[in-house]
Amino acid sequence: MMSHPWKRSLLALCLFSVILLGCILYWRWFREGESIVDAFQKETYSIKTGAFFSDGDVPVLSELDREMSKISSFASQSLVTISATGSSDVGYRSNNEDGRIGSHIVSRAQGSGVIVSKEGHIITNYHVIRGKSYIQAILGDGEVTTARVIGVDQLLDIAVLKIDLQKDLQPIPFGNSDEVKTGQIVMALGTPYGWAKTVTQGIVSGRDRKFNSVGINYIQTDATIHQGNSGGPLINIYGEMIGINSSILSGRISSGGTLGFAIPSNIVLQAFKQICEYGRPMRGYLGIDFVESSQGLKNFIHYQDKDGAIINSIRYNSPAEKAGLQIGDVILECNGNKIEEAKELLRELESLQGGDTVRFVVWRQGRKLSAKITLDDTTKELELNNDSILVRNGITARDLSLVERTSGVKGIVIEEVKAMSNEHKNLESELKAGDFIFSVDGQEINSVKELDNKLKKAPVVIFFVRNNRMFRLKLQLDNTVQGTSSKNTGKSYF
Image 1 (cartoon, helix red, strand yellow):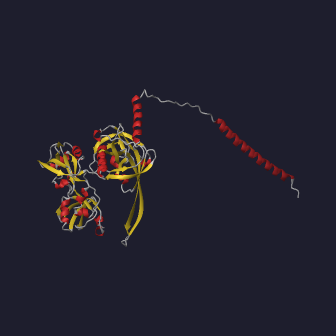
Image 2 (cartoon, rainbow, N blue to C red):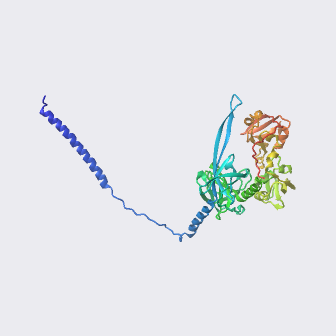
Image 3 (tube, rainbow, N blue to C red):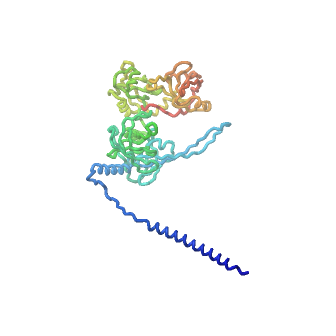
């Protein structure tokens, strides 16, 4: 059937309209795009090259810049990265049986070290390699080699390693840390987070800083020390090592910033020589901790003069205790040399070894007394403490320091509780570090020796304070048990 003519015309008109509309839309899109391109105008610009100042304009800063780069480049040749790996079996006891469920843990640590001898000796921090059985040293040129442990000084946090390479090594020279002055320019070298040859620059912020219980007078610096800098050198402008980067204080303790601390090089050198010559530190053990005189402390002990170092605490069963020294005694002379400040006494004692004799003149309650004491070797401290029933049962305690006594606290303080056997496996939940024991069997107690003597007639009833609350505990310890004592957390350096 033939369609009507008007229908064909209508269909043709619609098709034409669609084509026309498409052409219009394409034309508008193309023209608008073309207009955008045509509208962009190239920008003209000019930049300045060359510095505002020349070396002649800033000669001091220019020379300082070159010299600091030269110093750090030289010292970095002695810097190494320490990579240490170890493994341990850890486990726990199940609730319904005495079987041990454990797992094998692999741990890794990374820190810094510094070459100090042409023979390949390296000094680093002990905490970098503690518990690690496989140690590698990565040199500045990228060479990786195995390092072996020659010896450690746990108290100073020093470890001496050695690498055996048939090549010339660049040892760093030791500086004299006794000559370091506050405000001097220093640089801290290390490999923080694995970034080799990292250098930060600052000044010596302070000397003779004693922020923990080991008695070291640290060098404080504002040169940034990051995680992984431990064991690296702190150097002066002559490229000498004046300290080993060891610790930082951060967060709220230092108001949001970080404070860096280095072990003075003279102490490090002494420890290094002893470890190389004897395989262990030979530092003399006296068993005291002393503090600078302050008006508050002097008022407490009724001491009016300005000179002397005040004994703050004495270790149980130590040579100092056996010689009759007491907390609150003021040391006025050491081996004939007058002591005006505590740091002078520190310097007198830090060079002494086990077997050496020290002669003191002390002030006590208005009288001057003389004391002659033969120092023990530091390795004997644990042996001496093993005579304590507390230590043999895994409890480390100490007498209250003079500073603590000025606040009105009495008794003795628990430093660590480490259950030794199944019989004492609940001891840790009953007696904890930080507890103050002030009474035994209803009688006030003021020394570890008193408690130890009473434990010979165990059991005893002790009263102690924890978080301002008082507790009562019946304590019975085996006074014949033999075995490994708890970890030595001794307060005193000497």
